[in-house]
Length: 355
Image (cartoon, rainbow, N blue to C red; front, top):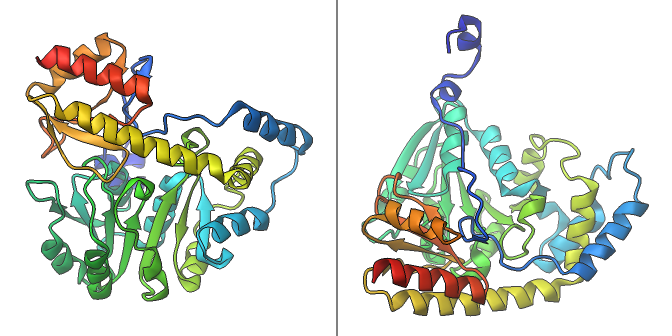
C-alpha cells in the first residue's frame, strides 16, 4: 500500500496480515467445511418463516433476548448470566480477543489450528507464541503450560482441534487453566462428536471461557450463531465489547424453534456419529491413506500428492479441504463426515484414485 496516511493509520498487524480466504469451488458433494449433512426439516422451516412474516422487520429485536437466553442456558444447565450469544463463535472469538489483546500482550496458540485465532490476534498487534503440535498431532501440554504462565496472557485451546480432530483431556485442560497467568479459551465447536468437555470448570475457575457453535451439530452454519460460556463477572465485562443488537430476528426465531424441537438435533448427532464410524471404516480399507484419529465430525488424512488427489476429487464433483499449503500439514486433506451417499462416493473415488 502506497498511501502514507493509510499506512500510518492502520495497525501494523493488519498491514502485515493476510485476509481469511477460501477459494470458491462448486461441487455437488461438499465435504470441506465440517458442516452438518442434515438441513433443517421443511416443516420447521415453514414454521420459522411463518413467525418471521408475522414479526415486524422495521424495528430492532429485543436488546437482550431473554427467552432465547433462557432456552439455551436451560439446555446446557447454565444461567442466563453465564452465556453470551453472537454471530457465530467467530464473533465471540473477536469479542474476547478485542477485550484482552493489544500490542505487547501475549497469546498462546497451539498450531496447526483454526486460522481465525491467528488472524484476529495479529490484527490486534499481539505477541503470538505458536506451540507446535507433536508429530502425531497431539497437544504439547508441557510447552503450553510453560508459555501460558505469563501474567495477563490469553491461551486458546481448540479441543477437539480443527483441522486435526485431536483433543485435550479434561485433566490437561484443567491443569492449563489452573496454572495460567491469564485467561484460557477452550473452543468446543466439535464437542458433540467427541472429546471431553471442560464446561464444569467454569464453576471452579474464574479465568476460563468455553466457546460453542450452532453451525456444526445444530446444522445452522448458514445462520452464523455461536456463544460463549463463563462466570458471571467475565461475561459482564465481555458484554461491554459485544456489538449491540448483534442477533437479527431470523436468527432469534430459528434458534428458539430449534430448541423447541431439540430431538431433531439430537437424532442428527447420532446419525453423524454412525456415519463417522462408517467413513472411518471405509477409509481404513485404503492402504495409501493414513487417518489421524479424530474426536470431531471430520478426518484429517495423510496422503502422497494431496494436490493431485484434491483435483481428481473435484473432477468427480467432490470437494474436500486441501491443507497441503499449511505447515505440518503438507501431505494432508480433511474430509467432513457427510451422509451415507456422500461418504460412499468420496471413499469409492479415493479407492479408484489411489489403488
